[in-house]
Amino acid sequence: MFEYKFVRIDFKRLSGNPKEDYREVIATHATDGWRFVQIFAPDFVTSGVAVGTYYELIFERTKRSEVTDTKID
Image (tube, rainbow, N blue to C red; front, side, top):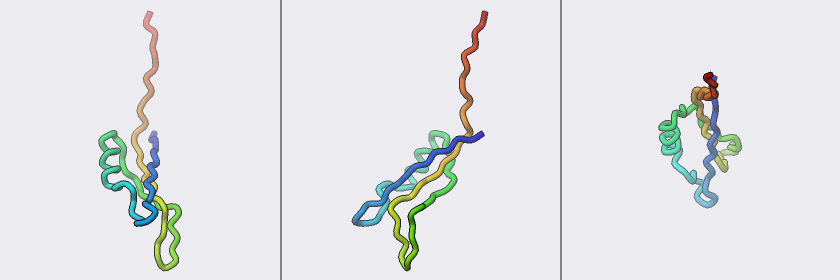
């Protein structure tokens, strides 16, 4: 079973550049066991020029098993 994480990277208003480097975000999450799955730009509109306000990065990893308390008599 997998768990998923969604990380939003907003764009700067004036320049239109991302506020964070997506490569660094992916590398950081990889050290925590997350596998990068997809970059998604849900609000991009194409009208000659692509315009958007954010990216969403999608990560997955194997769900960590929950530790259960066992009582030993």
